[in-house]
Amino acid sequence: MEQIRSLSQLIEEATKLCAEKGRKRISVAMAEDAGLISAIEEARKIGLVEATLVGNPDKVKACIAEAGASESSYHIIPETNEAACGIVAVTEVSSKRADIYMKGQLHTDNFLRGMLNKEVGLRVGKRAISHSYFHSIPGYDRVIFIADGAFNMYPDLKMKADIVQNTVNFARSLGVELPKVACLAAVEMVNPDMPCTIDATALVQMNARGQIKNCIVDGPLALDNAIDEEAAKIKHIKSPVAGHADVLFVPQIEVGNALAKSISFFAKGSETAGLIIGAAAPVVLTSRADSPRAKLLSIAGAVMLAHHQSK
Image (cartoon, rainbow, N blue to C red; front, side, top):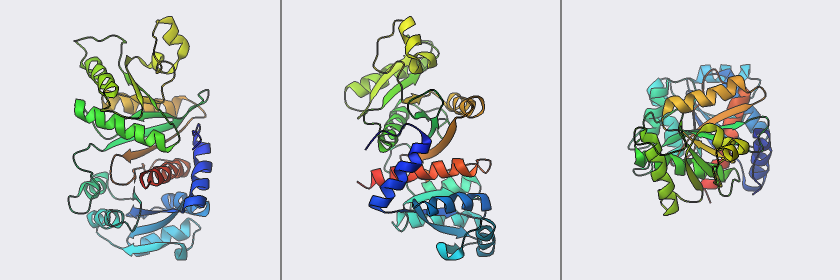
């Protein structure tokens, strides 16, 4: 597949793939928000998904009408208890009746309890589940992935390796054949007083020995050296990743969260979406403040990943 280089292209390629391979079904927990259903309706109209909506049936139907959609286009599962909405929706995915698990109006803790439920959830063995933001940024010829700025707070080395692998697998679903991963730090040299630089070096070695696959990992690298070729040249950094990173791996959640949101607010013309990855199926965890466009982009990313995982 051709590498996807913008989030507008993501929607085009997801539409083509679904036309060829078929739509994916999305299961929405507590689907009682008209803005959310507007995004799902757009994804349905362009051929990406069919949807199962779990929630209070009267509220769900009112939101469908407010979104200008038709009840006949959706499968509605009645459930009025918030916590149960998560369990019912995730069971649709774990039982293979749906392909993607998505958050509606329920609180995030109830949504995640569904995802992590031991009987019907989506955890795969002991592998860490993680989050990836993905961005189109004016002036860059590729999608930039940031992990993990929303789910894992202070990962240890094993979790970091899982986060990198999850993000690489997601990037590959968007056509990045050999993702370049930059392990970010404040400096480019290993400093025993900065633990993230030591972990970065370990991740590089794990990649070299095949413990992290299908990518090139380098670090520690400061942000400028990771994304700007000229900055890397000035500092005499010779690396296939420096200046060309696809994945910006951050050492802790504050770094990734601030970096992703700074792109959203400061980089005019940029677009941002996000997914929870590393589970048995893609998980769409959007904010109520996200625009319908951002929700559509997250759905499109989930569709691409679902197709990739079904190979």
